[in-house]
Structure formats: C-alpha cells, structure tokens
Length: 77
Image (cartoon, rainbow, N blue to C red; front, side, top):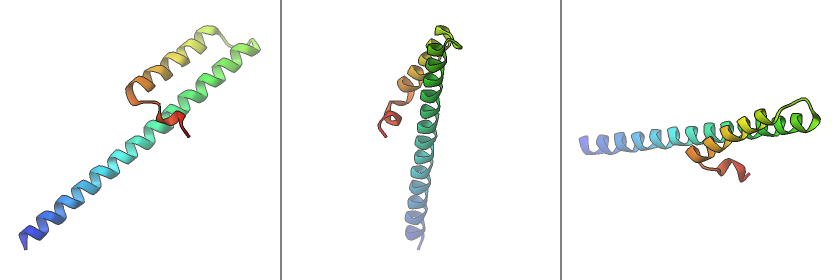
C-alpha cells in the first residue's frame, strides 16, 4: 500500500511542478508582450515628436534583457 501512495505522491509532485512551470512560462510571455508593446509606444511617440530617442532605447534595452533572460518565444504568436 505504501508503494502505491509513494507513486501517487510522486505523480502529484510532478504534476504540480509541471503546472508551476507552465504558469511561469505564461507570465514571462505576458511580460515580454508588455515590453514589446512599450517599445512600440515609445517608438511611435518618438516618431510623432512627443517622445525621445532615449525612451525608445531604454524600452529596447529592457526588451533585449528580457529576451536574453527568457528567450523570444513570445514573439512567435
């Protein structure tokens, strides 16, 4: 009986770990999409004359740091 419980406990642990990993992936995708949106807004503002090249560069640097840390999967969607 304890073998069955050990296996069930291990499967539950694996399922929980997989769920946490998926939540992390979704959060990183959302964060990447938000950063991409901010870059677009900064670029648009710069082109219209109400933004600055520095703001656009800051947004680009932040996005590049996210891509370096978490990958660019959020761009493929």
